[in-house]
Amino acid sequence: MIKRLLKSLALSGVLMVTVSASATAFELFGIQFFGGNEEDIDAVIADPRTYEITFETSADAALDAALRNASNLWTDRDEPASGVPGLLAKARGDYTRLLAALYNDGYYGGAISIIVAGREASSIPPDADLPDPVAITVTVNPGRQFVFGTLRTGNTAPADVPPDDTVPPLPSTGFATGQIARAGVIAQAETLLVQAWRHLGYPKAKIATREVTAEHPSGTLDVTLIVDPGAHAVIGPISTSGTENMDPDFIVRQTGLVPGQEYDPDDIALARARLARLDVFRSLRIQAAEAVGADGVLPYTIFVQEQKLRRLGIGATLSSVDGLGIEGYWLHRNLFGQAERLRLDAKVAGIGFPVETAEFDYAFGGTFTKPGIWTPDTDLVAAISAERTVLPLYEETSVGGRIGLEHLFTGEITGAGGFSAEYAYFEDDVHGAREFTTVGLYGAATYDSRDSTLDPTEGFYVSATVDPLYEFTYDNAIIGATIEGRTYFSFDPDDNYILAARVKAGAIVGPDVSEIPPSMLFFAGGGGSVRGYGYRSIGVETNAGITGGRYLLEGSLEARARFGESFGGVAFLDGGLVTDDTFPTFEDLRLGAGVGIRYYTALGPLRLDLAVPLNKTEDDPDYALYVGIGQAF
Image 1: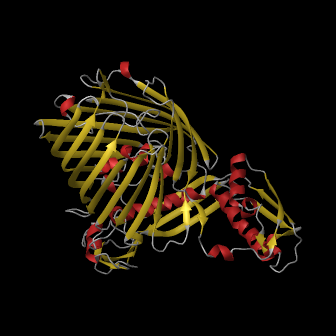
Image 2: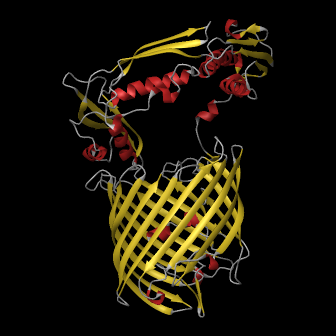
Image 3: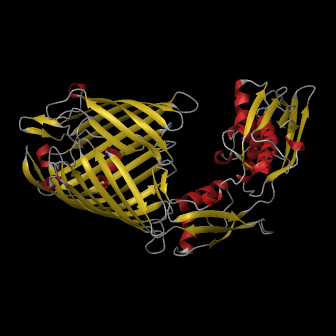
């Protein structure tokens, strides 16, 4: 089926290159090999000027680091400036940047001096004659750290509002008497005061009065913030701009915004997320009119720039156990003007050495998606697939399809369900040749609060599936179900040390395993399961050989450490077991362990894992290598 066609990304190494007709550059894993931005040619510095910098502060370590990071002179110390004017512009800019760093940590009486060739940088004309290299001394005396004194807020929003419209109290940001008077805290307080009114339907709320007074003798900062809520508003007419192939009416309908409903910033954010999910826009912006009309109506315009209609991708998979695979896809992202997507996938895998074409896997499939069925958050999805798969324990030739709905309940909860049908022919050493024809339902639900799909450091992922089917060859009803959970624990503020955990369980209710399609039975092993073993090579041992089971239990622990910006390492332990007649116990647990390295790119971490089976059988490999993009789970 289609979902197996896409499993290679999780089970082995993947290298995918996307090509468009206007491509003039080639970039792989975030590293550009040729082509690129023409502006780079103009970035050559005609008059490079070098300097030697001394950076002195009387601050503690944290503030000293913040000041150095704020200074362009310090962070760019190994790069030449663009002539004397460029060097002096950088030095003058540092006065503002260093002052902002002091204010952001509550220091309002500091002194900053930037001496260039013996003179204060602010007093040197741009055409001055400076030596090369020139000596620069930056001196910062932060003074005392201020705390908040008298804090006044005026014209604040009512406190008695529905829970969905509440905002965090100001003290939760540190905006309280006696707390360190960081400038960023004042900005946060202003944001909350304005947000409170906007959540009540006042889109043009703003800070009307801002008075900040530093009392140097007492070391306190007094702040007065008064809000102007502006006019109450409802959503007005919505228009679009920039459409080429998209239906403007569909764009407006897909936002879910209804003229006449009360303005709410959450509704605007949700509307933008709905449009972004269509994956047809290179850029989009939902912009309100400059002012609320006299009738309390606020018109909106949706500005969009569409992406190219078609996309082509090619890729490869590599595993020391499962061999080489080549795959590709063709995508049309807007078939009929309402973001209908058609994706065709093809794959040849299982290529080993020496080459044996009889051992190759073949797959082809197509998926059609129609967004905005009934609601903006409901999609119609129809898929067909045909494949031949040669696995260690069986061979499969099948054709199937499914049609159903996918619904986004919240940003974290999704659900899917529909009808499926499949015809499959299997050959294995245990049961011989068999045919299966199944028709039934499928259902899935997912909760995903992870901060990233490729490199998560926090959050939870829970997924559950249920598949009630009827099999016509043997006249049996079959129900399969799975549940999987993942979580992540960070041990430091920078998320350099992560402990990740995964557990999965599955069960099948129905006839004897000989009358259940092997593709539906549970197996373990492979890059997304128990590393160190072949893909779907762990099953139930019988006198005639190994077959799939009714029950599955898997788990993984992985410790991840990041070293600097680019590299990291992991150590992991995977376990899995499959049984037929009883729910799994730990007696037959198969374990795999290993280590890996990570190279972090803009696309996500590149992964190389080496795993060994800890209680291998004679048919299991001595080790397995896995290459991929993103963490293992």
